[in-house]
Image 1 (cartoon, rainbow, N blue to C red):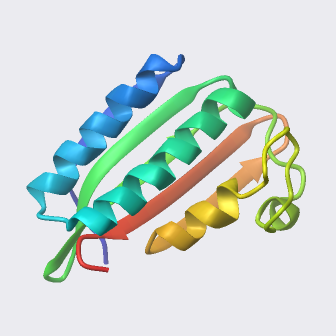
Image 2 (cartoon, rainbow, N blue to C red; image 1 turned 90 degrees about the vertical axis):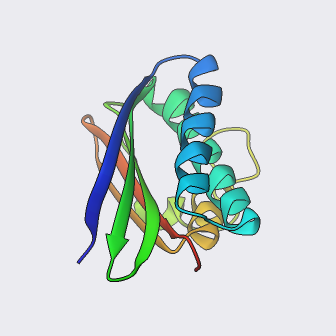
Length: 137
């Protein structure tokens, strides 16, 4: 069972909010003594997801939580938007797939960087992506 220890909620509506989010995530990662490599993976994943939220969902809400499972701590990030949603999540999770003009490495690449990855989307209602990166995993 994953228990939240602390929680920050950030409204993301413009590019400057990406920097604020990254800084806040880094502060929490340092507090739980997450190693530099895992911090880098987490921040890369967070940057990709928050930019997707801005690009495709017109912004939204980012929730940063320090979580604990047994004796290990981690960071759980949840990105929620009220955008158009993703028509085909399986396609979106395939390397090389892109609805934009990007390389299409975003969602599957993000999944590889983190310990846990969950995506839910409903057309016309939005998308929620939740990731967890454990401090030592």
